[in-house]
Length: 366
Ligand code: PMP
Image (cartoon, rainbow, N blue to C red):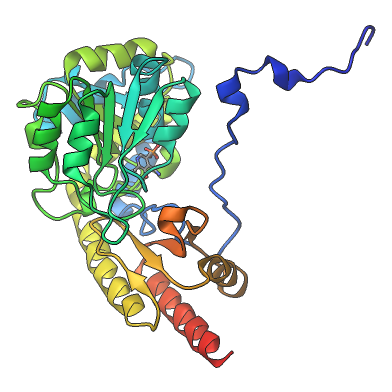
């Protein structure tokens, strides 16, 4: 190449993009992966077969329906809303990203309650949106609702995750109502894990009452389709229209649409597994909390926040000695010494309990 000069291509990058690190789920091959809050049971056999048939029938020489028409209609009927109030995305992540494209930017403000899903802040910063954080209580991880309401009074967008990743904490519908009334902006309740929560936890019944409320859901967790990348948002028609306008037209491919449609139709068949995960969550929580020096927070999700001395080393030890992968959150001050452990099958959880007991016993002996 002629005229090649040594210049730093990074100087061309938008500063907010140059500052980002690529998202790293820190996956490594492991016998038991409890690091990403997936549904480790997988789909029931019958549903799996129907998904496989639907995939086989997918038409691939044509573009997919931009707005996933059939799936959108099925989701709308499920939730009792007009299809115009539903938008399907390439995972909830895409919808969050598009939300910032539509609502974010300089002079605009996001309010969140850390520790929470880190992607909100990441996308906000990418599009140069100011981020105001209202920290959760350091002991209970409950939201300071008064402080949140005060901060939201000047927000363009407020995001509350319920059940919250990584703490498992709920944000009550009564508090959602209060928040919506107090802010001139949009309130997004991220309900990626709501299927694992107790009855009455969802903000969904408030959608008609609160004109600035949107609810985010995903097929990645309870509905067993993390690999297909499908999420959806229900919200005011104007917001859904804006999200439809800023999105990439064909972001949800034909296979993903077909798989999600089958799973959506079969949703009642997943209830037994979800119930089992809830029961396993309580069993795993009790067993881990019974170990000396270990603290476990109550969770309405399919994961547990667990504080254990030397968490970073514990995570490596679980990975290297037992081939168990969990999420290390110990680097962040508000979750110091914490791991996030997804609830697996009974067998997987037994192995985690056994491994943690050995570790704590050996730790005592040292
Ligand atoms: N919200 C929360 C709180 C999550 O934990 C996740 C996944 N980790 C998502 C949204 C996005 O999920 P997906 O893109 O798989 O739908």
